[in-house]
Length: 95
Image (cartoon, rainbow, N blue to C red):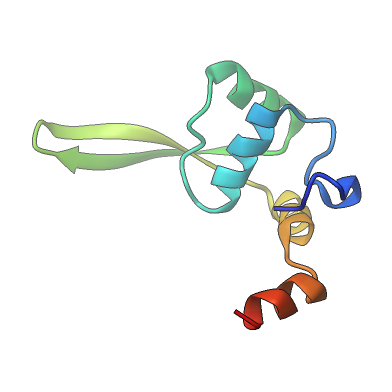
């Protein structure tokens, strides 16, 4: 994620921290793990779409988990914002 000193690289400026955390999780293919209000705000803004449910099973039986995804243009913008700069990549390669 971009450092706080670089606001130009922040994905989806103007969103709350809960919304940004949910977007980060969804962008990485994980469940959003947030409040319904946060999901509703992201859905209403068109930053995520409901892609149905995923059926999972455990020892107690099957259950459904709602699934969300980012539309391609939103995901592209998110990836661009969270991508490492050349300087950051060089620092990581030097480890």
